[in-house]
Amino acid sequence: MYLLKTVGDYYHIIYIKPHTERNSGKIHGKAIGEMVFLFVSMHAPIFKVFGYNPSDARFIGDPVDYVIFDGYTQIRERREDRPIRVVLADVKTGGAGLTYEQRRIRLGAERGLVEFREIRM
Image 1 (cartoon, rainbow, N blue to C red):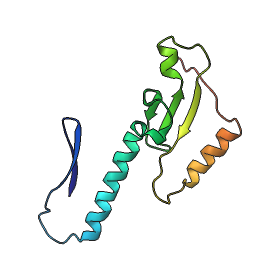
Image 2: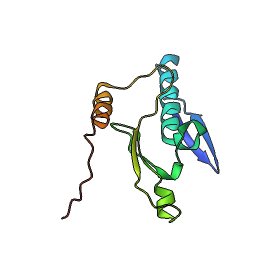
Image 3: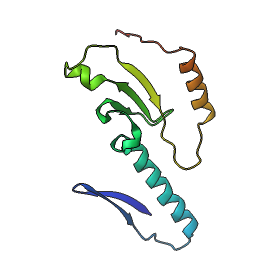
Image 4: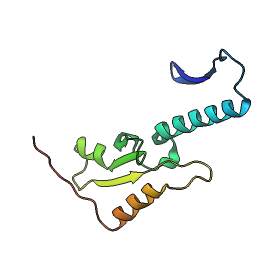
């Protein structure tokens, strides 16, 4: 079993030996791959390729990884006064593509099927 542990500013992937040795290396490889992907997905804003201010991004994980309020930090700090662009983003690695549901979300966004609602209770 693999665990992701933080020590100060560093992340360590730790292997914990299972009670039985029935698990194959293939399972371990898959587990470590999933952990690395989860780490990359959740920490994508710190990478230059992300392309947005990390403070503007909110991780939601499903059905897309991030809702980015592009320019929010500038507005919050009163350095700009303009509408905030909302971006739905999903982090992919390797040859992974969008899921069927993500493609429908993208299509809806491209067609302008996005709105803002104030819900009062």
